[in-house]
Amino acid sequence: MSTAERIYSRLVTRSEDADQALPEQVRRDVPANGLRLVGATTLQSSGDQVVNAGTVLPWLFAVLGVPAGLTGLLKPIRESLSMLPQAFLTPFVLRARHRRRVFALGALVQAASAAAMAATAALGRGLGAGVVILGALAVFALGRCLCSIASKDVQGRTVPKGERGQITGLATTASGLVAVTLGLGIRWLGGDALTAGGLAALLGLGAALWVGVALVYLRVREPAQDPEEATDTADDDDAPSPLRRSWSLLREDAPFRRFVTVRALLLVTSLSPPFFVVLSLEAGTDALAGLGGFVIASGAASLIGGRLFGRVADRSSRRLMSWAAGAASAVIVAALVLTAWPVLPPGGAAGLVLVGAFFLVTLLHTGVRMGRKTYLVDMASGDTRTLYTAVSNTVMGVILLVVGAVSSAVAAVSVPGALLLLAVLGGAGAVAGLRLPEVSGGR
Image (tube, rainbow, N blue to C red):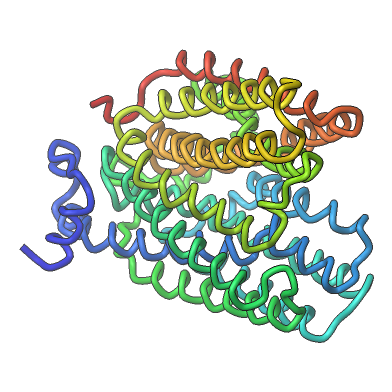
């Protein structure tokens, strides 16, 4: 038994039946490939924590004196542009026999974008700096598009069912540890007084992490086609155009359409945490006011959730999605009831409730995200998986903009009202998710 196989077998509960169903060469490479995917995904998630549109970049904008109106564009640009173009990038991905190269290209695009942000943070100020950073963030999101599409294919080609969720969980746990360490370092080095130079160095670290992602990913031994797919359809000249195939998937593929619908309803865990931050500050607590505090909370959720949810995703990814979304909705309702209780003082206890709710919903988001990723990889194979990934993410980019706009409009009137709206959507998603067909290990 090789060193890679010993380490991999200790970290991951092996799926013997699924392993034996793979071709011999693919089966031999599973341990080494699994460890490489864990390493690359850990570096990727750590880079995400550094180039974070919800924590680091808003803080940078405040330090650089960028107008507040531009700060509100950070999240929509990062989230929507990383998903909306995926259906249009699909033809490029389908032409690549080895999808690891597509992923590496996307990682290098993100590295270059992070480097551009770092240079702007060091040299720029005001409106001009904000515009340049937004432009770099848009390019960063496009690079993320390529990584998102290609990663599902690479994992599906190199890792059997029953082990994919655990690999994602291990990487999430490792990146959480990195994020907690980073958050503690931020508070120790600068805290709330972190300078533009310090943030530039932080973004430079992010660029280096993304270069590391590309280098590790290129070492994955990937077969030219999915072992679960009998033939390779990427070069079929008679196949309809990718856009037509995408529309056909939504119109004719009922299981895929139901998955996209459920995924749209599960936005509760993605969109609600910022509202808890707003309510906690209004309640008079500053526990999450510092940049380091935000990063620590996010990292702690990943650290706990990665190991906790990885094996659950391999047993039943649909149940993990549903249970996590339902629990998040319950946390939101409980927090709103407790903070509305007149016995609680406006600061102390109420603030602790909101901070606790922020952490729990962020933790549950790890479960939702891990469940839906594993479900998508397990439900299809080959080029169909590529199309599923691209089409679902493109649709979600549109839905994210709509739901985000509606929840923001409601929040302008009542932040608790916006949270309650998201909780209702999450409850509906939890029920709908349990009706999805089982595609994972089911053990």
